[in-house]
Length: 365
Image (cartoon, rainbow, N blue to C red; front, top):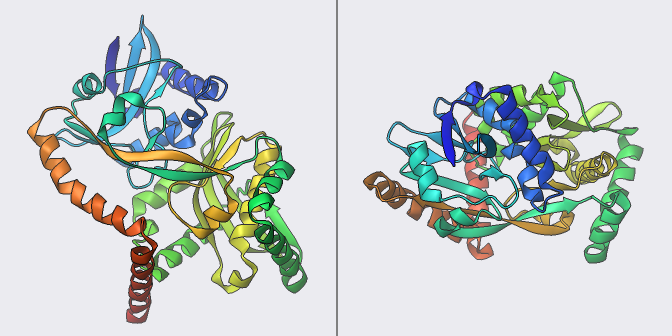
């Protein structure tokens, strides 16, 4: 096996096509999790436009590419998954049955350590570095929207009934409800980012859209369109006015849910839930297998999901002082965060504290 490491922009057209082909075959070859948009070449190329350290290792057998490993690297040899903190799916994209040696791969990439927080299931050579695994809920629509509704009705009939009733009330109170699955108006994208920024601030979270590079990344992905990948903006309108929106990415079989938000003025109608049901209906009509809601315990995800995937966090290392130092710094932070999020009696007070901080921030402006 030969491993070459390149900047994303230096990949040949043939290599990019081979990467896309491996993904497109994943669902039929027993590894549907590899067809996630976060593992697509377009996502790595887009992040590479904004981060200098983004690289792709191309693994070849008999001259043919069989696997692709995207990563970010510092000058000291600390590696991270591409878009760590933003990406909801990470790992090595490979042909069925392909096996690799994790330490050999790190050595070829010039890495002492590679950190991940959403490692896709089925990456056995990386599993010895896993420090924790977590559910990542999905909405299965492969068998059609009515079959999906039937599944969630079976465990939450009140949720479906109430959400559909709120959609009807939204139409009666405000005017005709209209859903656009693939909205191409950049103004609608700007509205979504404004809503999401306000939500981050209101809940005391770090505002991702206060970082210019993330805004530019989303705008770039919004304009990315090919048969195998596209940025997808979906908007719910009432009487011609946007009330909820979502931006994510899709491959032929997976819609990765990423940035959902709604106008708080219409919160009583649960427009975000209505939007997700409309997204599921449209995705099913397009032949998508599932919507990936991403790791994280949220009430709306529990209501919408049909099952959970598993993603993991941790570090793959090889013997090196840099690896020891990096893990020593990062492990306590991860352990504290996971201890809080995994326990409702700790998570709920933490959420209240963050919201209080958000209110104080708003009052200070």
